Image 1 (tube, rainbow, N blue to C red):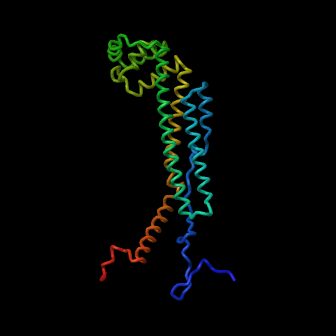
Image 2: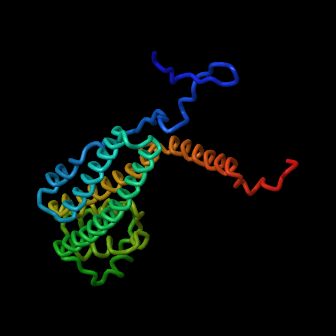
Image 3: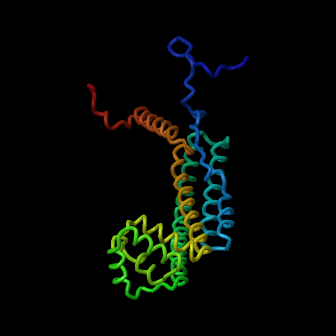
Length: 267
């Protein structure tokens, strides 16, 4: 004859057993939204192809994004493969610790890769300036002239400087606060992009790819952090924590160690 584990006898009556208490408790885990950046670690391959040249900054960012994706998928695999030697509470606590370690590790790697990318972008900008013969001689006077033009004249002047790769004019226009030449920040940035694409297309392509790789890798890391609570089932861990605290309080009462109520004889 089999023993019923789904019911219990209490106060002379049969009652359904509480399936969410005891050492064999298992709650349903929450769904996890798996972003594309966490599912695939192959983004770096497309960046390398787009760049057209080997670049250490892109290699570093590609390795970071790939590592984040690999770690996420491994943590999801661990999540679904609970050891029979652990309760679900222990399993989720261990998973949470593993996730924290991964965030710490990739946070350091992300900082290094980002710093490298930013340094590389500065180098590319310097190469562009050398290419156009960047010259700040008479820059202040040129800015005054450009600022005094009407919008149509200013647009034509800057467009000619961009088309001709005029390093002296470009230094005056792009090397100062945009208001000093009658431009907005967005306008100045757009002229700068036109200038590098027109005069140094390979550098422009590399610059664009490094920026894209940096921003995409940062987004992958943010996605990784944001999914920690759902992957490690924070809501379930909190239930177990509450049960553990209730158990500890009950043990104190059972052993007479409930100091808060020990002398409250009439409570």
